[in-house]
Length: 298
Image (cartoon, rainbow, N blue to C red; front, side, top):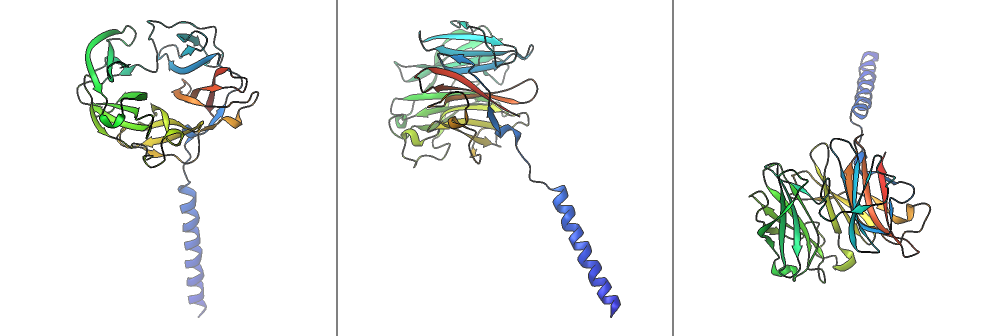
């Protein structure tokens, strides 16, 4: 009788130990690319539309923005990405600009919206520094876009194609659609709408807008967006074909210290030389001054 009791107790002990081992070797993974904390102060005062880029050689941050007083493009360069000198004119300057798309064949394009034709054209570059306007049409809006185009973003996938994500039907659904190019970004074909699953959200401020992609170090693609002045993100594990919303929020304006921010707009994230990620985002302060602020993963 005691032998069976001993066997039973041994079995219970082994089972419990196995459970402990399972818990020890299978922790819930955390994604450090999701946890952003505001950096103190302002990167640029009197500026909107941040477009940061990291120099692959020096690690310097080139921050392109629109000077709010003159509505002219400027660029400032910083070694730490936090303290920027006064910006200089960015007319005709393209080095390390987040709007440059590195194409599958190693060349570059900058896609530009033509307001008069409802079409997207482009500039071409062999080195990503000097761009020349090129003829032709890269993409024509669809009838469902209602002749309106908002923020757009393009990136190359690993299948040799180029993905174009854009906001269409601004007065209506106001959400992200997808077009695709198989010829190095020369021409795009409409793929589908409702990329972020908000067709039935009601449009306007209820949609996810200001989309900007970032390829992570592990090859996944994260898409940062804004809805109602809060920053959200979506993740693609199929090279930009589809996106799933990440839990929680990436950034909320109420967590900024030192000033009252009334908005968060146009988030763009870069990977720093030390492996962390930094988001640059425009905001309207309560004193009605536009600023560029930033937040960094730890």
